[in-house]
Amino acid sequence: MGEYGISAGQLVAVVWDKSSPVEALKDLVNKLQGLTGTEGHVSVENISQLLQSAHKDSSFDIILSGIVPGSTAVHSAEVLAEMARILRPGGCLFLKEPVETDVVNNSTVKTASKLCSALTLSGLVEVKELQREPLRPEEVQSVQEHLSYNSDSLLSVHITGKKPNFEVGSSSQLKLSVTKKPSSEKPALDPAAAKLWTLSANDMEDEGMDLIDSDELLDAEDLKKPDPASLRAASCGEGKKRKACKNCTCGLAEELEKEKSEAKKSSQPKSACGNCYLGDAFRCASCPYLGMPAFKPGEKVLLSNSNLHDA
Image (spheres, rainbow, N blue to C red):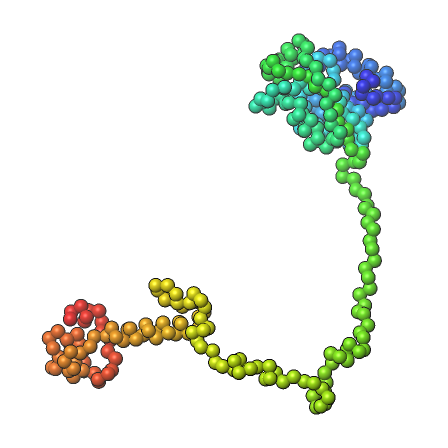
């Protein structure tokens, strides 16, 4: 019992399961009671009833689970979290559990590394493996009987973990070194510098003031009107198909629109005899204006697609 660090006056919990031999459990409890003395206390709890036992937070200094000789208890994540809850800050958990040495897809028996990870996730720190030993024949039989699991690569592992030295949900005020912010007052202005950058209406009439005329900054080249072609971008209108840019400002869009309107005018049919505007009496048999009223020379006449097709 010395490896568990139990001393007089401590509160110890022994967790057992259905695989634990009754006589071995009684013998373990008697030994623990001799170590804790009259000032301490040893509680015995079944692992399947631990979640319903409603122990208060931080109730025990040490918890021993699966330590009963011949026990093959398996600890779920919920059971480990409950053990961490009822442990006092700084208290220790000692457990023994059969583990697999080979990586297998099985949820009943974990590997030693997964068991250590489960203890860490439950909130314990300083989790470490203490000992590995082969299963005794009665423990192998207990695994087959109570866990319905059969494997030749099982070992019994002893693992311990410690609860941090603070209670779950506790808080503490942080002492932060707050430096005083520098004063937000603006620095005093130098009178000489303020006078240097100040210009009044009287200074405009002062002959001693050296003022620059903005027109004198322009030369003859700046006053010339730029050529519209020089304002075009390098890629404007290039390629097989000329196309103006979006929001064109170089005049290409207007130029293309003008070309489009001229091409539309040239596509209108021209009179071969020159009498089309006089009316049907003066028109040829193939005149596209047949059936339309007379019009003035030069007047714009729109022909429908049916008229052009008939012609």
